[in-house]
Image (cartoon, rainbow, N blue to C red; front, side, top):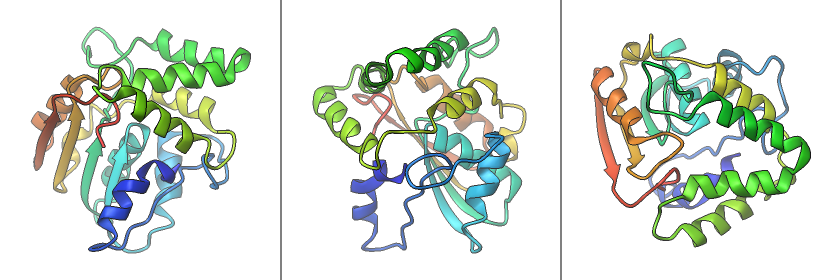
Length: 213
């Protein structure tokens, strides 16, 4: 949900009109079905009739890519943070996790919800020098709107989605912000996007993992 951007939004609010978005089924946004990448992007876009600068992290960055591809006139720029066009590893895409690893997280939610979330958050901060403090802050934010409800559909979306074939069609100016220690969206995904997108600039944070902000 949008609470993860609280500190960044506070810094930007002095100069910009900032909207913190709860994706469908997260925070206070109602769930949608089917929870496909296209449906999520269309649902979010429907709330913004005027052109916007879109900032997206992880799954939100995947949604942002789809938004820019589907509605190029509505997206002035992208800031893609620790995200990817493809979250699952295969023979020609090493910059991701094995599908079985994501599927195991989904399966474990049924038997050990809190413990699975704790381990998942720990993976997002793995390797960062302030991992303990970041992990505590992220866990507090995750539960700020109550018990998360939209995780299973989101994990299934991450397994299925693949925007590699259309990424070069993202024409708007794009900033790419990646942590070099990220185990979920490895730095190779950011470098690939930087090479594919026609107007992109990559910023690498040497000491950051999956939550560089």
